[in-house]
Length: 194
Image (cartoon, rainbow, N blue to C red):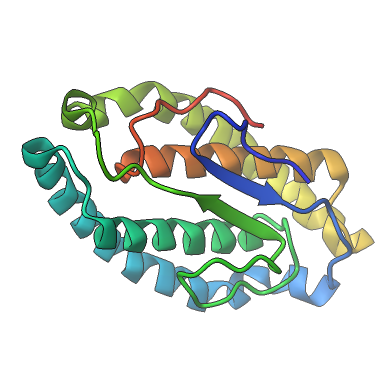
């Protein structure tokens, strides 16, 4: 099991590689369609909530707790769906915004409601640019690793440990950036896969 460093307010724990059904691996992207549709639609809501929260934080210095709960739930669901697509688990993700400690991919953490830094919130998009550049490159590498992992899992029934660790690290980085982009924290995300 690996996790985000304890200093960052959000964690993504991913269980180690486990055997996967070859048919499930072969049809993974078809099986993932309902999850992707749900995550897309909830993501629209999360973007609207984030836009409203941006204005609220700029004027009041607080992120409304109910809106934060929704945005955190969206991020949790998105992380599980992406982990399933990244072949990090063979277990189908639940259709839920709530935490599921039994699921092999667990997102946890609490957002920052009070005491927000209005300046970093105001310039949040600009502050994300360095991470976006790095993630663009990592995303290209992860795509190649994912294809190789898919072929390996199709023939052997499991994703090689090194590839699993790399894909989990990329997902962890993406989740940290999403948490920062969704204004859930003012702490700047580290440049790290672990």
